[in-house]
Length: 93
Image 1 (cartoon, rainbow, N blue to C red):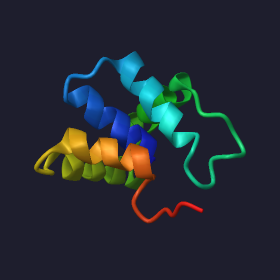
Image 2 (image 1 turned 120 degrees about the vertical axis):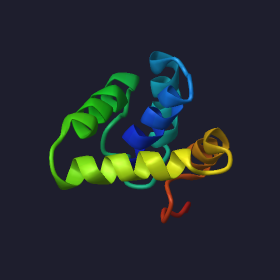
Image 3 (image 1 turned 30 degrees about the horizontal axis):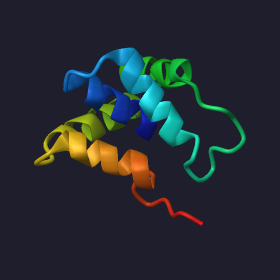
Image 4 (image 1 turned 180 degrees about the vertical axis):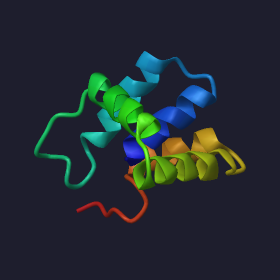
């Protein structure tokens, strides 16, 4: 979900969808637990569509995380830091 949140935030900040999706995908491939599959830009775009169009809890969580990130003093920098270091709560080995 966080990859789709980061993509949504970047697009809302004016980044081009395909470029932002490729950047998020590259980062997600290095996150802990993502080794079992290769994440592509199309994957991240599909995740975003899925969470944005979902109903219930998943959609509410997605929207809340997007809104929270956009309220950061510098949301672009926040997303860039998460892409570089991994999602909140993850650790690098």
